[in-house]
Image (cartoon, rainbow, N blue to C red; front, side):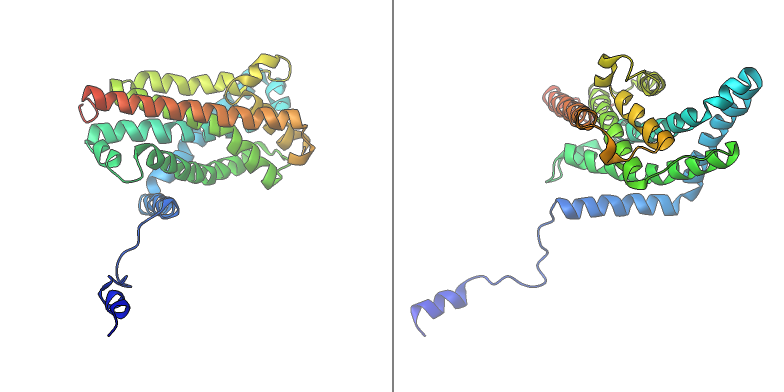
Length: 277
């Protein structure tokens, strides 16, 4: 046997049974599967979320119709679109901020930090998975609202999904920033809940009348979603400026929130308060 043959024979061979190194696609698949299992195994919680959303919409619709009468009926399409976006926003925001708060209370936060992927990518993918689930439940809420109010909207699925996803990406950024602050200061739930009501102001902001409001989270996306679902404007019919502002605010706020989250978790580790509660 020659020396080359001996080197080949002695070289370690990759065993087919050796587990391969997991990548980000595997992580994304695992997080989505986990969210699916939670959705399937705890359906009462998911159904409860839909019922609560419809309960508050019922109070808004029937109570407002008793007080405002025809004025509310004339603007019901805008109210439905705004409420649909609000449910999406609250789901996206709370998916990160509340999840991180729960991990801090359970004492399992440090396990995420020790993963080879890092804490921030895991938290981001968990947030995306919950947004996917929120899309499904919000679609059910939207359908129920249309039936309750006997209203018809022009729903182009591609346009609605694209505009909604880019709109709530800015909210994901806010959720990241809130999650980072939670890691540092622990119990700030009252402040986090207060911000959810601020989404109502952002969604109803007059983005086309006041140009500066376009730079705020949700404001410009809400205006575009109103045009898409009420006027039937398709995604490719929006101007490049409108689409550029929508993408810019989505990427900008998400990157800013991600940076705040990274800074806060690193500071918590330096201070030694990451696992404290």
